[in-house]
Length: 203
Image (cartoon, rainbow, N blue to C red):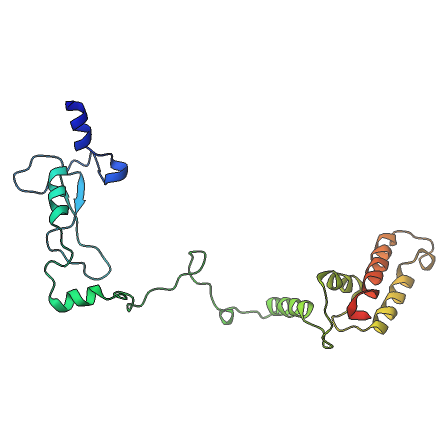
């Protein structure tokens, strides 16, 4: 029975904040028990962004402290009213955080790009993803096929046929002395043309 009472008086640290083996004694005068539980000083108010310094109490004294603890102790009526407002503390400006928890990256204006490497790549990507001037829709498959043929987004049906004819003549074995090393590229050109020919953007 004594063992069961001892278990009740010594709650598990995982759930009750016990810190064993600190070597600290209880901060209450005349108490020789180990200080294993943190508690703020009596009537210590939070100032700035830092909590007040903690003191260490034994189990019995931390229970006494918790039973009589009053957050508003030592505050004036105005301070209590301010602390009870629903948005208390939200007026203070806080540091902005990035979505990944790291510092905010530098702005584009902070980069030096004398060779236009970043800018050229950005403009190229924007051109690839831009919409057609005539408003006809382009799928991702259409964009890939246009890239195979070396055509821009606004190419029309006539430009498509002209470019196809040029590439077929360029890669066909009959135009290369029977050399079939361009056969894979020729097949890609034919497949891209056949796909675009049936696309709503070229009908």
